[in-house]
Image 1 (cartoon, rainbow, N blue to C red):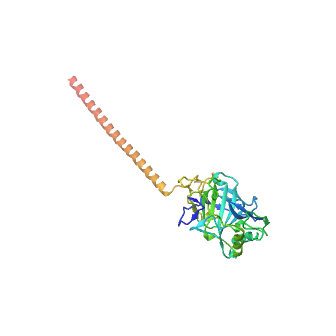
Image 2: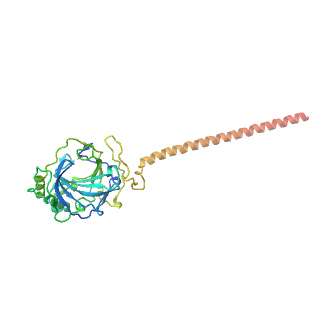
Image 3: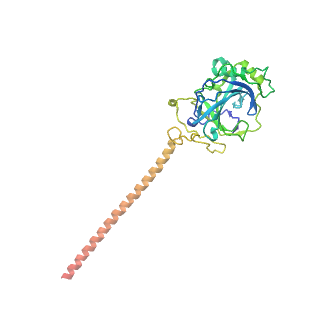
Length: 323
């Protein structure tokens, strides 16, 4: 499977424990600027990297660095692009391999931004820059301070399903490994038509890829971010690559998964197979013991009979000699 991923399948493998995403961001000031990241034009908004802004994904702690707003989307749904895509990017604070980077991706649609604080915030970030000062042909712009603070907790959906997979950077086959969280169309951020018009005037649409990045098959977390433990049902999640190799089956930090085990609890089928083998072994041992017991009893009886016959013959011989 290659990226950017198209989410069009009717179902995906479920993932809970190893795809668990928990966050509680603090408010942040922001500097907004036009930039070029992943070889695509975008609007970049910075975020405070302090101790209050720490999130956890699959047992690894991450710190947010900022967000990127694109004209059209990397990910598609039933082969259809969204009007835009917002990506909150995080750096790993601890961990190795796939724990280095975390990208949280949310589709953007045009609608009534007042119906959700997330869409209204994204509209405010876009409108901080003006088309008059940010020409479409340029890949950069002057820095502009956001009027007021903003909070990723008001942008990233809570308790909403999301897809997750592991891969390289968009359109790259040699970058560091990245954890991707991609929210569904139902959780799209609704921006105002004014913000959408300004975005298209300042940022070029995402170009078609010239190469594909290898990724593992995606899984889906139905509980969503910040799901309470009382609502969680553990389902084993083992993301695999194109060759079927399991990339990881426990927390990337090396911590045991839920239930105190290093990997998921075996299924009922595994227990059933083990019980069958164990029962067969016990039956075989009991059969051997029973046969051994029978042989021992037969041998004992034969030895006693042989001994009794020898004793009688000796007595008769003695009696004949005496007479």
